[in-house]
Amino acid sequence: MKGPKVVLLGAGSMFFGRQCIWAMIHSDILCNGTLALVDTDIDRLNKMTKLAKLAIKSKQSPLKLEASANRLDVLKGADFVVLSFADRGVYFRGVDCKVSEKYGIRMCSGDTIGPGGIFRAMRELPKILQVTRDVENICPEAWVINYINPTAVNGIGLMRHAKVKSFALCDGLHMPHIKRTYMKEAGLNGRNEEKFDLRIAGVNHFTWMLAANYNGKDVSSSIKKHKAMLASEEKDEGHSKEKFNNSYLLSLWDVFGLCPTTISHTKEYVPFWQGKGVKKDKLPPLSIFDVKKRYHRHDEMWQEVDRYINGTIPLEEFHDKNKPDHATDVIEAMWSGKKQPFYINTKNSGSVENLPDDAFLELLCDIDMNGPKPRYSGKFPIGLRSMQMQVLDTHELTVEAIVKKDRNLLRRAMCTDPIVLSIADSDAIINELLEREAGALDW
Image (cartoon, rainbow, N blue to C red; front, side):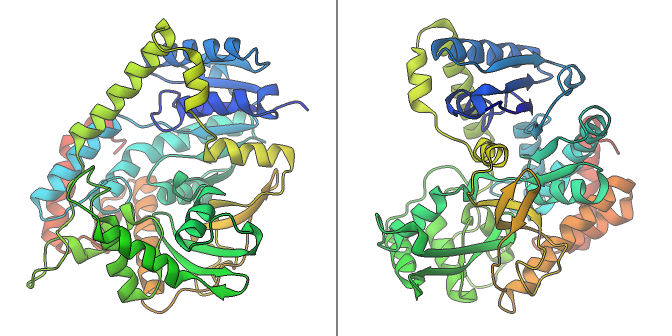
């Protein structure tokens, strides 16, 4: 079977470049297609291209390889265009978080909600929409897959303002791994996966477990007990996104009656650990995004790539170490017609019955070359429903502010955001970030 042409914009991505190369080689379906690597950083592009060539040769794979610093050179004939780029992402996340902390806003990730999410979208969404105009002209039948945070904001931007087929992905709910994880936590490891009815839904990074039933029986209490055990062992260590996650999770579960499923981000979407309370909470305020640790991870990745290229590490380790990725799994299923559900960010279309049909949500979907079709998820309890709408409204306002370059809409988006609590602070953050990031903003 002929494979698809997959164009990867952002070949140097820490989270997807190597994984995409590995998956395209190791998939019996994708290996018969073409992988086109694109990155505006020539040094990174050359390294990833060398790695890909060596990996293809070492497995005698039929995969065809293209590479260019200019996407226009490789878009022709594309079946999928995957967006996985960022403009100095770590640096600007550090700026966003430092400035926000100065005005009393704490972000442990800084790229999806709060001022960090808004300003990252301001840096990336205009470039994403530029890409879609090229796709419209060169390969209008291609599926555009957004893999760039803030996932929901960029996905809404594509849905509202681009004439291409699109959806968005986040690797946090990668199937079937997320399902197996919860089965293990419920004490169902090794049992029949088909009998486990797991329903997760919500705005990306603000998703919640609406159902966890095995053979018709609710097993969420067993999952909660497991989380409590993990919480009892937590220490103040690791990256800012990783600290005390099970403890934060249990606190939200106790209040809202549902399990948050991407707690490393969800804890940043609520105001409870911003350090604003009068009474001391049992949990500490959020740790601020650690720029040095993230740079260290990037350096380690590129050192590893260099060692693969110069032969210090044998290519067999590359083949043994990596594993399938969410985006390439989805592409394989779409192209082959494999009946496998995935969590996709797309229109609600009735999946969550008490949210609007055009709400852009992360939902379990059946998917083929006609696109994602959400399965029924249920409904949100009162309280969480309104919080979902607040996040959606923030994201929608952010998109409109960016597209229209409207300062008033930007201000409204910032003041609608769930962790921004002062108009004066909001104005100060906007002014300072617009000045400090002027060179990266189309504003």
